[in-house]
Image (tube, rainbow, N blue to C red; front, top):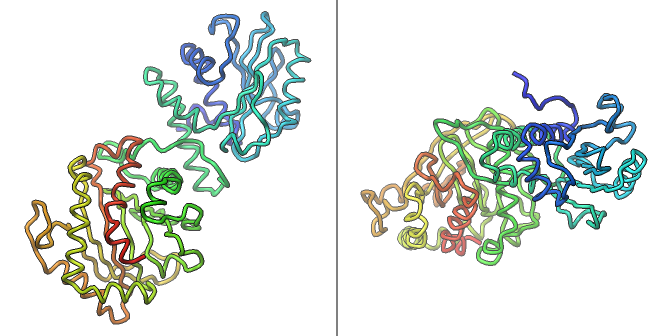
Length: 419
């Protein structure tokens, strides 16, 4: 069934129409919007304000194409009797233009409004815009509006609009329309039996998470994450059960993800994986360091990782310190992976590691021995933390980004060895 908000073809118009519909239908929400978002106090009660999309006040409606051609503002909130208006300009794919703001003001003046406020909503940081906020001009990001909508817990229209923004953003990411910015912000990983995993939503969440994690100082200073290094060029795998991206460590530029250790983040159908990946074709220096340390010292290193992760595991019992090893092959570049062998075990099974699981030294011996004597196989392994959706309630909050950072920081002893 078509969404009630899907009335336009352009993303700017779709999102603006969703917001304006919610404000028109919920006048308490409209009052909060004017006070908290637009910072514009109307001279009359919100029940006496008119709300329009892609149309001029007191004139017949026009088509979306005609509105674009004539440069009509995306939204209006106004009172003709009081000569008061808020003009809304929405930008998703294009940059904000100061000349366009001036034209909207002049258009409002020609229509007889004497008290004119302008609200511009974009996907980019306002500091990057070439238009400066000034008197009766406010510039915000759509992600700020999204956070505000999510905070309006008593409004069904606010919830529906926020969810629609997530849907539109997922579609745009799928269609590779986004060049910069975002419509929403990370608010948690909510997959569960009641909210099953979908590729589109996982891809949207992954994009938001990676953007937040890339800017974290604790990862830059503590682990040497390079915030300017790109991640995956194209995130594919719509038929699979996981989407993933990575952060690079400083000094990796130009060496490629297939030859250097990196920090991987994978959103799967059942769990979230926060891992340090040693790829199949890892450079000789790293391979040599892992071989020279020997199995016993390597086990001791992983016991340190388990110890450093204890505070995280106390706060989230479903966080499992994990070693994941696999041998894979591909028939062609975009083919689904053929899995030849896979081993995944809880690091607390290593003898001497603290924790409840029964100890079993053979799991580590198998994983480490296969790496040391890989004999040309496509073998990679990862060390990190896996968060089970069913057991980690903290994943459903925006603070889950802190859990992810803490997981990588807990792996610092291992990262220091392989950097």
